[in-house]
Length: 393
Image (cartoon, rainbow, N blue to C red; front, side):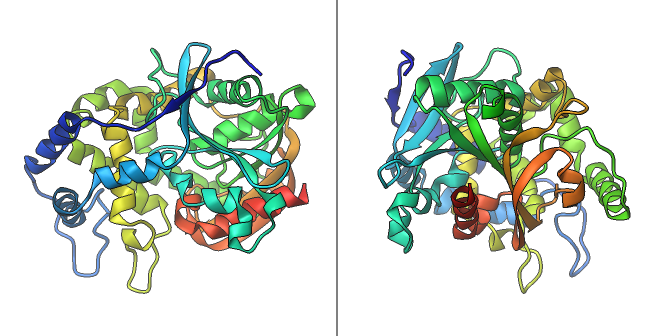
């Protein structure tokens, strides 16, 4: 066990901070958006103003941060410092005599909130008809520069974070080995954990579970199916990658408008939740088919109350400065890998034949429902897939 100090942490946001946010939301001056034909996609040009007005009205009149603060504080929060970087994390001890540790990593524009709804089922499966001996210790950190983790002085990325996480798990928390899971940035961090910090190369990560294609093997599409996927992936990036290019190159310019505008941040985030989440419903696409207003606003508030929109977007620049998200030619992730393939994931996995050239896949599950924020969207389905993967190990 490391001598790194672990300090219990309580979320306690001042009334002044909350009132400043509220005043800016109330004072927002609405502008115009393009006319949309009846039955047309109201999100086609970006965040739908009709929905944004509905959301901000709820924010001002009904949303209760204090209730959510109390709910989140029911979880065991801690902070520690690793290599000069302050890290916030939730640490829940699982049932059973010797629970395995599971490290869960969120992405952007998400937060640790994505996993809070499945903590009980993963840590204490006996409460859900399962076996207590399958309980897991859960470690849910906030990425550097996100939420209650400290703000780095310069951009850092997922490769650096994987190094921090391996130290968190082994040196700070004292686990010899652990399993890691992630989507969005979490999938890249988790990929690097399996690649650079796997037990096969002297690290502590013994297996990884992914719900997005993050760390890329140095392979090329060969079959017709693989080539078709590559064409679709390229088209998706053309249509949806503008935010990434901006945040990867000039995040500081974006920050000047966003840091001063809670509604601006809300619109930037809501468009992603609407586009990336599986919003299909019997009545057509609907953001609230996947996420409640309270969930959307609480996740947003974790950025607003900590003032971390800026440093969170730095993460994209940090990734670029690290050299990107590609494996070296000829190298692979050798630890066991589980894949949760959600039909609504916009940044979807390539065919298994292609992915297996870079990953030691021992588990693959296709889901008809669920999108980019899989844990948040599918809850128990997500938890059961993680449990199935871990049991099979």
